[in-house]
Length: 212
Image 1 (cartoon, rainbow, N blue to C red):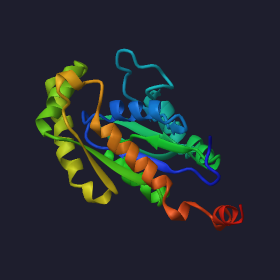
Image 2 (image 1 turned 120 degrees about the vertical axis):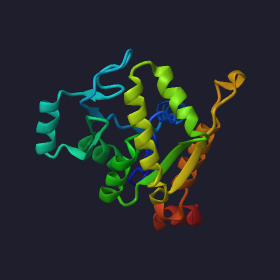
Image 3 (image 1 turned 180 degrees about the horizontal axis):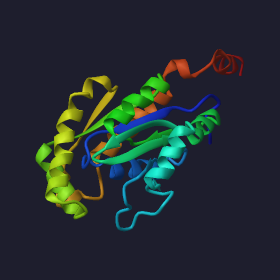
Image 4 (image 1 turned 135 degrees about the vertical axis):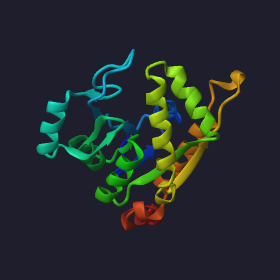
């Protein structure tokens, strides 16, 4: 069910390999009213990724045409590929009263805040940077040089952490607890707490309670 007022925008970001996909996907399964904004990219799909689910996969010419048409809320280049957040879906979904979550790169998250001042920015951080290399290597989708480039970017991204509202430490789960991530609990707590902030409720809500 949608909320009586505008929805909230949750932006989950952090270094590549920090676990954004797993944490956000697990939270969405728990909270059906939380809608997901699919980003667009010029990078090639990885094994198992479908267009319109993981990303909208565009070639560079199509992406740049949409940029010229102002179809993106924000765009950025990351590790040689373009990424962007489609504007129409977010505007319409928030207006309908549904909360939206998206997971752009760090610079993209900060750009979104400039357009949506009320956006809630969450930085997902690994408990050890050495785990980033392990997770990136486990994907088997990039060369050693590409992984090194992502790790260098990750160190730069960490410098922006004070521009976020929340930080979640995504600890490496032990083998016998892979089905449960404490980081998901933490993100769910943030979503629920933000929804109950007093300024999201108008005076009519309290009058109805008082007069009931």
